Image (cartoon, rainbow, N blue to C red; front, top):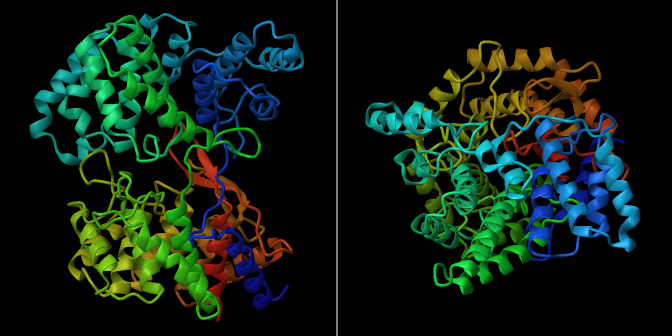
Length: 566
């Protein structure tokens, strides 16, 4: 297949992901934690457990008896413990149902093949305690944690923000519920807050039963729902929030008048309806409903990079959708929810703004102007950009900062902020010559993003770019591709990582680079006849959740790389 044919076929395949309203969206892969949590919610609601869900657990057990966190494979102790709990609860729910005897036999078989493991992660411990498999004493925090929290509160005014932003809840023991009332809670990453509150409520209902605390935690959950009935449009967070409200409703039945039963029932019903939309074709549940803002922005950018005029109508429709899904504050969330309360993040805001600029908008366009103002307000003191709000659990991220730089350069605005960001980017390179990243795997993406941004900002000959190029060349696999897992360990090549690494090398306008040429050959040789490329688990949520596959990624990143060939 020649280059022109490859690009045309790839663009044709990418357009299959465009929906009627103009946006692009790929179906994300299922993960163990949201699938297990979904199972517990269905059992708590008395819903029937379908065979398709049971088959997911059976099909995703590894030969060693473990389950992995995500579609990348591997074996994970916490995912295995959670899967075993879910299967045991399915067994209990099915009981003596003779019509499900075949499924019960299969469950018994997979459980018999699974190893005995000690409980470690407190989130999993809470699930075991909630289902009556361990005592709540095994979950509750030791006294020294409360003392440490009080000390942290006392020291908080004098501690540097860089330290506060890195504070994380403990792993083995549940933090005390009083954390909810502490200023330390405000310094946590936004997703951690959404995860902690329902877990605090579950703990409170099953232990101390303090009426005022339960009421405040319930109110927080009810007030922080998204417009579609989910919490943060995230599977695990929504599932544990539903478990908490189901438990609260049950407790309220015993204590009439304590909570607003009608509000609880509505939230549970709407949340469960949303949770059903997470089911994947293989029977499991994905962690996020979608990443359609990112998918749409990247699709616009990649189509514009090849033959923008040829795809003008599709680009215009996608740009219109982006405009309709911009938040009132000027930013974009990771998932389009018009009129919703999903918070804006810097990465989606930068790429959506860049897509609008590529599609013909200028810096005077109201949406672009508002997005630039949002980005300006959310730059950290260090010069980088984190995902959400600087100083509250967020750390600056290489790829996000790089995307903001590109958006600002395209608009010709925020020059002072760009210079500060470039300085941060240069300082963030590792001793080995790579940049690590938060949101895609891992060092290849950080390095590729940083190189592209520095080159486009006129720093192609700086030492950091040279070191980054040298590092990419050194870690290239023998087959001409690149690959690593979310911890940065080398793996077999993936099309996504090969594409963005090749793009970075070609961004230096040195098309004769042998590594870049081998990367191009890899992409051309691994493209399917329908124009697609096999997708891999390169997206990252966070450690306890694992990663995800997005079938849009190989197409958009490969098109960007191939568009750079002279």
